Length: 374
Image (tube, rainbow, N blue to C red):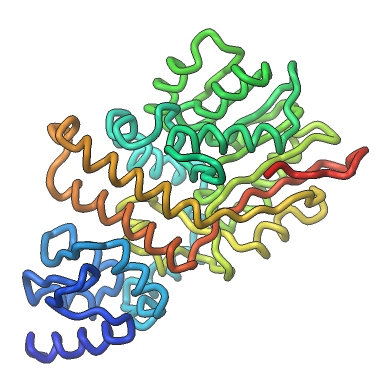
């Protein structure tokens, strides 16, 4: 097909999302090369993202562009061979096995502590903030950490496991404010190095360790923004690992991005899976409860997905504002990739295609009725 024919076909697809090629509105796409049309029509969402990284198109408001794309389900109308291949791969292999899990640590979380320090809040929290009464990112993240501690009913002297502890933000907060002992595990070497510095002098132990290798007892277990890397083949074994490590009568809080429907691959998130979070996938409510069935009692379930829109927008603003401080270590393609990552995720939450859940389970029944903090 000619470039003109491909452009017509591409515009026909965009019509359902009220987006125009080279239009004047903030969410209209500005095309710099007709190569864009061929890439998108053959490679779908992967082609769209790679074309943006290569500078083939721009948009003044990527967040609104993606919100419109996803609200209209336009992403489902262009599949491509890569989607089929990714789906088959996810079914044939355990993409989140112990060895493969290290890939996301190396690709994303080891991308450079300077990058995250110039994007996140002062506590280095890399999950959604709790904006109920907060006016700044720092306050929103402290409110979220405190919310988790209150939901866990933390008391002085308790032993807590943090699965996927990141840079030690929760461990530091809980140890300082609630006087608990925290063991944090992560498979990112960069996170371990900084987390140990941040938690120095506190009753906190940071380990470079896979959650599957933890084999000791805790009064409470939390996992904030790590379950997205577990994969459907490992959901049950993950829950069994938590069950093994949690004392009877203990509480387990799972904080995860999720979706409304069950899938067995991240084929519809090909670009994100290839460039940002290798082999990641989002769980559904059914997959979570099925994995927990017979092990835990469900006590509380809260969704505050709309707060992720605001959190991501502040992260993006910080990234842009501080780019000159870190750009010596990255290139222009990385800048476009990271911008695309943050704002495409904003669009997903704004469109309602992603959820943000905090779920509280207990091991065994509780003595009193559980009332989750809000």
